[in-house]
Amino acid sequence: QVQLVESGGGLVQPGGSLRLSCAASGIIFSTYAMGWYRQTPGKQRDLVARITSSGSTDYPDSVKGRFFISRDNAKNTVYLQMNSLKPEDTAVYYCNAARGGVDPKRYGYWGQGTQVTVSS
Image (cartoon, rainbow, N blue to C red):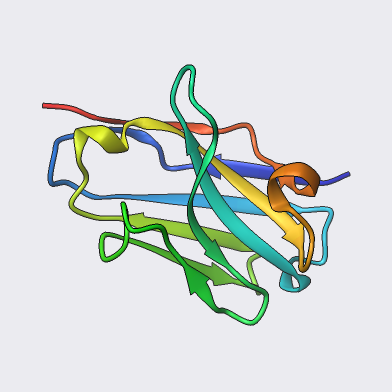
């Protein structure tokens, strides 16, 4: 059974930093592309960072230069370092695991989500 367990969310002031972690089990982690998505009420779930099995990364413009994704295949864990946080980064953040070549939103595995709130 595939499990993705996120941790590290919380309340942070604008300009602050947080690091999210996602521990995976039930998959051959090193062969999966891993991603972080976020969602606010009434809106679709959007990609914020993705890392392929070979380590290539991708970010939307909204977080480029502020968010950094990394993976530790020995620990079956993917991280999201979030810096210079803004109130508009407030959302539930979800971890995703997908095999290469498939639509991760449709065919990937999801974690339960972790709330990130950026507020003074």
